[in-house]
Length: 81
Image 1 (cartoon, rainbow, N blue to C red):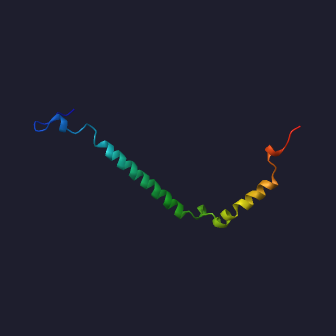
Image 2: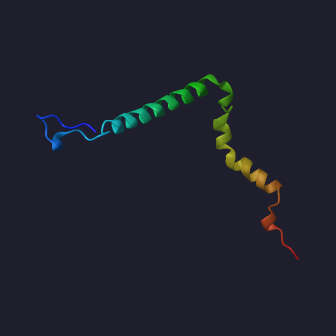
Image 3: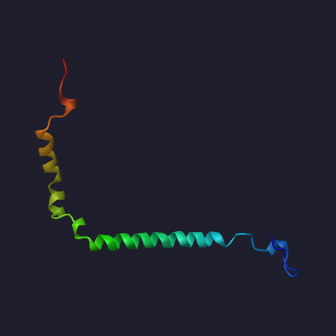
């Protein structure tokens, strides 16, 4: 452990390891930015990730879901003897 010099008091001495927390925080923030940038880059380069006619499918989801539930019987709706 380092001793404070003659001109400084122990109260003014920097805490041991005190500079590592800001570096860790900045590093994690930069890592987050890098992961986001990679994710956006991959998604923009991959045309297969785009759902065709997504708006029309979303607008008609309730109707198509109603048809799907009408054609299949739910196990909860059947009565047992």
